[in-house]
Length: 132
Image (cartoon, rainbow, N blue to C red; front, side, top):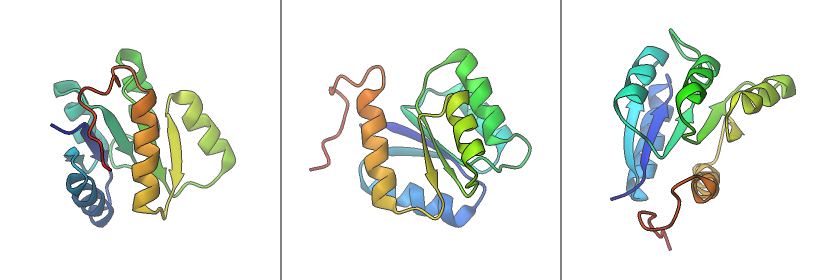
């Protein structure tokens, strides 16, 4: 079984594109279109990695990261159109593991995911899929 990925993105086109791409690469993918749904999904299941937009309806990505870090260390890669350096630095300080600016390249997202997953606790290789 592939690693479990939660995509938190309110843009349906981006969410669907990421889910399809990652599914083809052997990942198990769950989707949330807004902050409340993401918060509920994070309470009911453990994921290996979270791809998260910041500008979400109901609960922002920043708040979700802050809440998540109170209880777990699941890696979070932010995918955002927010380009200001101060925003990027603050999100990383809140606990995000990486920050990718939109628009992004799917292969870059994949490689950054692989890097973060390789460094995350429990990345002993037994459940990691070799994509070569």
